[in-house]
Amino acid sequence: METNQQKISVIDPVSPALGRVKTILFQPFDLKKWFLIGFCAWLANLCWGGYNFNFQFGGQDRRSALSDRAREFVSVNPEIIITIVLLISIIAIVLTVLFLWLSSRGRFMFLYCVAQNRAQVKRPWHVFKKQGNSLFLFLLLMSISALILTALFIVPVVLFCFVFKGREVHFAAPAAAALLMLVLILILLAVIFALIFKFTNDFVVPLMYLRGTRCVSAWREFWALLIGNKARFALYILFQILLALIIGSIISFIIFISCCCCCIGIIFFIPYIGTVVLLPVIVFKRSYSLYYFRQFGPAFDLIDVELPQS
Image 1 (cartoon, one colour):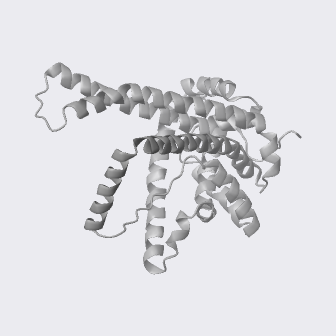
Image 2 (image 1 turned 180 degrees about the vertical axis):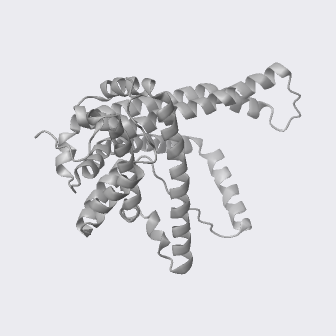
Image 3 (image 1 turned 30 degrees about the horizontal axis):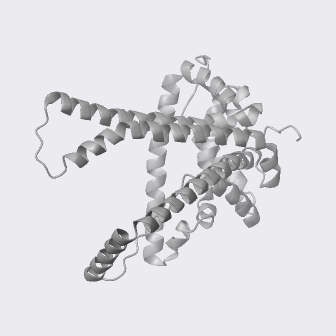
């Protein structure tokens, strides 16, 4: 699908995306609207965020004693440990799948709020049920594939490091080349799956939204567009990395100042509340991809396009 006759810019969508943030969140300012859209945004990113808190209890001696007791308990009660590990693993898998499903539905809810400038939860939850479930199955399949492929290449590296741990190893040229090749393949896999997830969120989900189709059908349409515009989408990814660095630096600075000056920076780490506080950034990122996509023609324009009644 060629679009050589059209001007496709990564800079031009910035201004209308900022204007979209102003229109949705500040004209007028409505706290209820912020919380409703923020809920959809939080749901959409349920599987892609995380918080890391590191608490230290006691001194080194106490931690050493606790570690000795833990090792003794493990050696005496291996069945209990195995059972606990299995239960925790099962619960973690179930919660991950549940969050992925909720996130898949939430992506369409948040997209609806941004594209329509409406703070609604119930309607997009029902209207995009088919698309959300299709996206969930696709992301689940991609996640499982990524884990399996990564395991196939990382297990030999881990085994090698475990076997030769603490030994002086003189690599033969073939062995060193093979190990380097495994590492490069892992990096390549990470890049490929990152691009799949990125393109799915930024462009395939909007196509599913517009066409009412399932994920595979939307990916076929986007693939044709991608093949005909490889350089443009490569530039889009590079610009997204630049935006992420800029936005990340600004947010980190704000959080740092907030924590140092008045200790209110903790609100950024509270689930849902942190999303509401950062809503202008999240709306901008979603709006930017939509305004970039619309440059490819009216068939890819979601902004203020009314949905069929459902």
